[in-house]
Length: 103
Figure 1 (cartoon, rainbow, N blue to C red):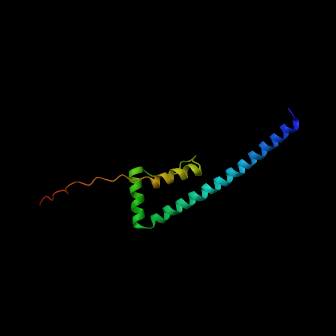
Figure 2: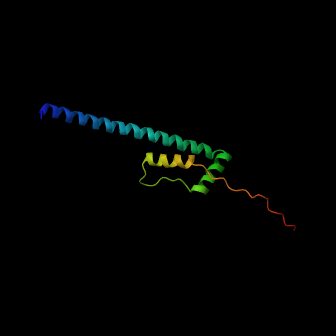
Figure 3: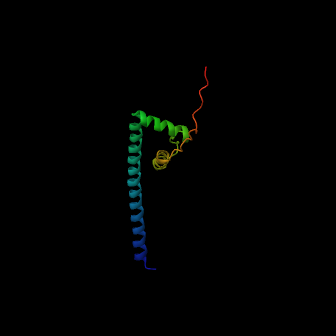
């Protein structure tokens, strides 16, 4: 094998790895920004009675959505986004309202 071809291929590989690390850092920063935006949106929800009620319903149905110690920003962002987007099942209302017993 031609040594210069091998050296060129190795240099290209190093360049790709460097570019990949740089790209990974860019993506990580983007995910952190999206997570901050999502958390800010949740904070805005907490400022309204309707938003607070929505968050309380979600907590009651799905449990709290807290960040685990070893969780990456990307993993937590995905979990939090799914928690917020997930549909809450409708509660069944009774066919007839309960009768008032005199008293």
